[in-house]
Image 1 (cartoon, rainbow, N blue to C red):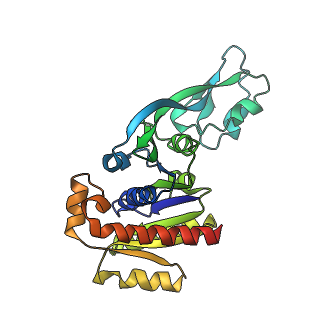
Image 2: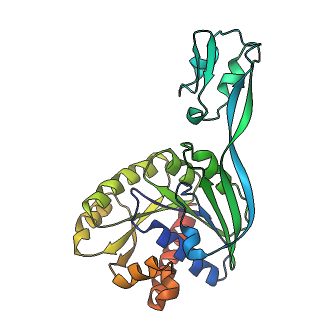
Image 3: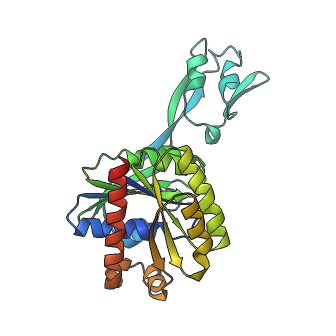
Amino acid sequence: MQIAIASGKGGTGKTTVATNLARVASQGGQRVAYLDCDVEEPNGHIFLKPEITDRTSVGNLVPQVDAETCTLCGQCGEICQYSAIVRIGEKVLVYPELCHGCGGCSLVCPVEAIREVSLEIGVLETGHAEAIQFAHGLLHVGQPMSPPVIRAVKSTGFDAELTLIDAPPGTSCPVIEAVRGADFVVLVTEPTPFGFHDLKLAVEMVRVLKLPMGVVINRAGSAGEETLAYCAAKHIPILQEIPDDRRLAEAYSRGLMACDALPDYESLFANLLKSVCSMGSKAG
């Protein structure tokens, strides 16, 4: 089973939920894999403290043009929707940072003047945090294309009964790449106007992908009535409400797992795991 933990905005507690679910599932005897797909700013390792045993380069295929063979027909530029390759005058220019690696330009070239070469854009690190199988991606600074690194993280091939995917925040292409193929999506939100606004965007994204979902409200308090009413109207289950507890923030600031630093929260995350796995199984 693959469970994606996502959020419409950053700072809602997504990684807190994902790492604690991984810990309680592992302590319960399940074979667990934790995949940190927030490759621009991964922080699951701060809490799980894994031992990294392997580091692999991740590249994106970009076009390389043989100027002597090229006839300047311009077909490569016509097919590229992102202007990563364009003909300007008597030259064909390539902009690797815009390339999505689809290979279309090389396919349409009538004289086979274009070949694809790998450009390193990040790295994949794998290891283990006690019994938890661990992987995260690290996108190189200045590289805008994170989906290839996310795909590398998701293709690690761990032998796991439960895979927890810590998705990037937001609702753009990286998030879609991370949650694609999941059996269930947990949307983590907070009871603030920004949190509520971005939750609605995230819900629409997940519905377009036709994936089952539930909501976790972090820092829950009296200001969450609007979120509760919205989820009830949209028939979205509230999986858990995590209290607005200063002790949680203090543990987080020290890089400690909530279920380790505060034993009374172990049952909260265990119940959340049970609800998520139950709903994921029914959806599957």
